Amino acid sequence: MTRVELTGVELTGVELTGVKLTGVTPAEAAARARLWTRLRFRVSLWLAARLLPSRVANKPLQQVLEIAEPTSLRFAGLHHDYITARVLRATRRPWLMRDRRCLRQGLLGCRFLAEAGYAPELHFGIDGDSIGTHRLAAHCWVCIQGKPVLNDRIKDMPTILVHRVGTGAGAQ
Image (tube, rainbow, N blue to C red; front, side, top):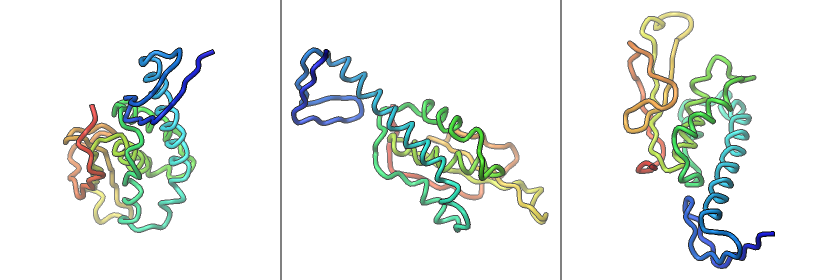
């Protein structure tokens, strides 16, 4: 049985400081911290994905964009590829918001990327051919440092709005 005694623990990403370990190597402790971070991330994402349709229903765009704002820097150390893959998985079979999948993915992706320390941007575009029709065709995608990481940009679709989320400088 492994015994861990924690005194004055401070977790920053996956770094442990002020930890007295008995029977656990620092590498094992760091691996456990990463595991707990991923588990907390997956639970938070699952819950946020399920609640999102009720949070955006009948709301103006400004209030919808507030959902993408990070609550804290809870998931530092997670790679953006891991986050985007989990967002795509969590939104792959939507019960609600079926015709707005990119918005759902964009809001969740921006929020969780920002909570991991990145500075994501949510880009919105409108299909010019749909202007003046009964239904406007729009799309959104997430970029980090100008490169799409979630939902590719559709060619010939001009960007009409860029919403910058969080203030992170970008994780590694």
